[in-house]
Length: 101
Image (cartoon, rainbow, N blue to C red; front, side):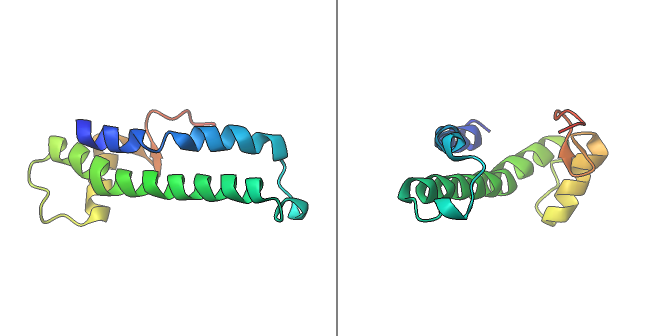
């Protein structure tokens, strides 16, 4: 689990890119020629994809394995359903997120 967490820590620069992009919000058509704006958006999209990949490839399987050792034959959707049944996920949201987000 530590390696999965440390892998995600590499994506912390998404916060820096979001902070820099705030100066240009709301982003409009006039910003698409601005190299900095495009670079920030590109970094945010790339880091977000890496976070999603890491959660799906490493974190979710590790969490499900702690609930049920017999996960090798489970499909990804079965692993998600297992998390939902255990109370770790609620209607497509992680249980620790506030309901109004």
